[in-house]
Length: 151
Image (cartoon, rainbow, N blue to C red; front, side, top):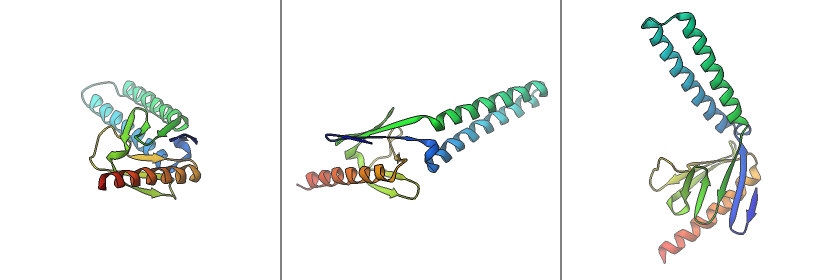
């Protein structure tokens, strides 16, 4: 994690955070199930069972490989006094109503004023020290925003 002026950056890999890891496995399982249902449909409409089994196993292998690569990829968050960025998602600090810290799972869940589709809603961490610094950073800026709004 880096602090530069009023900017904070940290990285994490999903393989080191069990909540993020579970999320990727669920996405992969959903994709494999979709391919399986498509395969069953194709077999019912007259497609060869052998060809469909080969296609299904190949698709499942690719999805599994993609999951392994995704779990190991480093992801970067950056946060400053205006916004939180996790490419391609952005959330403005003023859109955050509150947040919830889960130290056991090393996650900070943001409670937004308005639910947005392309907003950062969860911050994942590998280290507890990074998470505590991000918590202090968020509390500081949310407190300053609330003081400005009351003045």
